Image 1 (tube, rainbow, N blue to C red):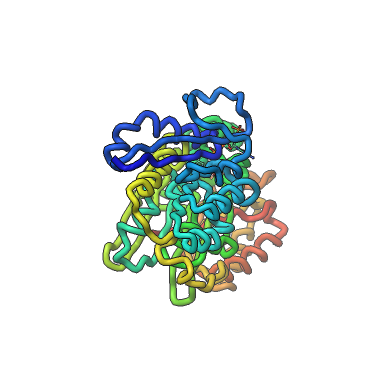
Image 2 (image 1 turned 120 degrees about the horizontal axis):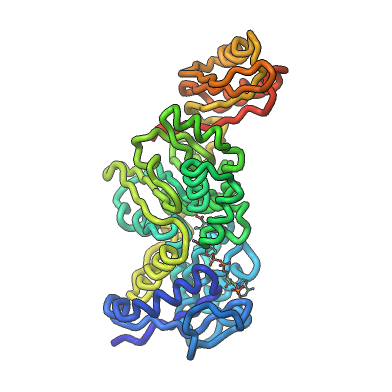
Length: 430
Ligand code: NDP
Ligand code: HSE
C-alpha cells in the first residue's frame, strides 16, 4: 500500500466540516479507490473552542493557516476559508511555493488570481484543483477539461448560483418576499459570507469566469463579465413571466465567437419546457455545447455542505491517484488572451415592464419609441385599469440589439407618463 495522502484543511465552516466528515465516513471506499489512505492530519480555523460536530482527535491544530500551508509532513492543502485575497490567497500561494498540491472551493480567489496561481502551480509542478468552485456538486470542471476534451466548446451556460435559484423558486412557489427567503438560504449554508455576492450576481460571475477559462482555454477574465443580480426581480415580474410561459432564472452565459469571448450574468426569462426552466431550488445546471458532442446538460445541487464536500473529495482522489491535468485545460502559459465582447453587441429578445399612468396615448408614445429604434414587438400585456394609480404594462420584443434597446429605454424612462424606471429582463432562447 502506498503511503497515505496527508491532508491539511484550512477553514472548518460549512464546507470544511463537510470535507472532514466525508473523508471520515467514506474512508474505506476512498482507500480502495486510491490505493492509499486519505488522512486529515492538520486543520486550521479561527476559533479552536467551537464545537463543529466532527472528530478532530489526533489532528494537529494551527491558529495560523499560512503556517500550516508550509508545515512539514503535508501533501495537500485544502483552502476552504474564502475571499479573493487576504489569508486565503496567502494560504494558496504559500502552499504552492512549498511544493504542496492545493485544492480550493474559492471561486472568488480563482476569478481574480486564477491565471497567476495556475502559472505558479504549473511552474512548481503541483496540482491546483477546484472542482467545488463551480456549480457545487456537479463535476463540471472535470467534464469540460477531461470528458469533453475532444471538442471545441462554443458555448457554456447555466444556473450557477444555488442561493439565487433557491430565492427565485421560493418567491414563485410561496409568494414570500426576497429577504425572508434569503435568510432561509443563509441558514441552510448556501449563501456566501457576504450574501450580496450571491444576490448581486458576483458569485455567479466568479464561477462563469472560471468556467470560461476551462471551456475555452483562455485566461481568467473576471473584469470582462457583464454582471446583474436578482434584486430588481419582483413577485410581479415572476407572475407575468409565468403568464407568458417563462421562468425567471439567474444565468451565467459564455460564448466564444469570432469577435472574442462574451461573458454575461443576469436574470433571464427561459421558456417553460426547456431543461433549465425546470431546475429549481438549490439545484444548478450547466449546459455545454461542443462541436462533436452537441449539447450536454449537467444538473445537481449547487451549494451546501454535502455536494461541495463531494466535489472537494473528487479533487483529493485525483491527487491521491497521481492524475495530472493542466489547471485550465491547456498549460497556463499557453492560455489565450481572448478579446472580451462588450454587452452592447449582444442581440436577443427582451421583457420590459413599465409602470405607467393609465391614460390615452401612453402606449402610442412607448411603441413609437421602439419603432424609432427599429425594435419590433412580439406581444403586450396590460392587466389592470386604474386612472388614479400607475398600472403595469408588459412588452415582449423580437430579437434586437442591446444598444438599440438601451437607447429606447432611456427615451421611455423620460416620458412623464412612465412612473418608475423600466424593468428589463433579457429572454434567453437556448
Ligand atoms: P464558512 O464561512 O462557513 O467557513 C469559513 C471558515 O474559514 C470558518 O471555519 C472560519 O473559521 C475559517 N476562517 C476564516 N478566517 C480564517 C482565518 N483568518 N484563519 C483560519 N481560518 C479562518 O464558509 P463556507 O464553508 O461556506 O465556504 C468556504 C469556501 O467554499 C468559500 O470560498 C466559498 O465560496 C466556497 N464554497 C462554498 C459553498 C457553500 O455551499 N457554502 C459551495 C461552494 C464553494 P471559524 O469557523 O473559526 O470562524
Ligand atoms: N453561495 C454559493 C451559491 C455557494 O449559492 O451557489 C456555492 O458556490
